[in-house]
Figure 1 (cartoon, rainbow, N blue to C red):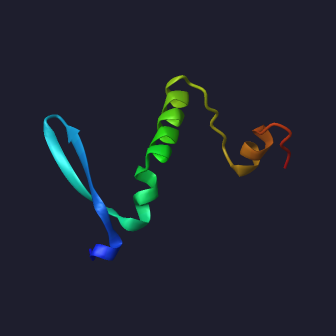
Figure 2 (figure 1 turned 90 degrees about the horizontal axis):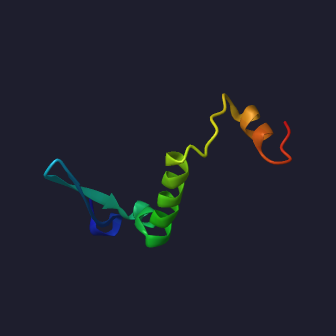
Length: 69
């Protein structure tokens, strides 16, 4: 990966092992503090069971406030 396409490394620790993963420059936005805060907010909603699974796009759109297909 050339320097212009490379942002840095992401380290992950699991069971005493550390994995170093290359992060492409096109994905650097995901690792910003703002983006990670949003991911944590979503994770909290999932843990609390505050989600709805729909079978298809039409059902999803119909489930939105004021939504209709």
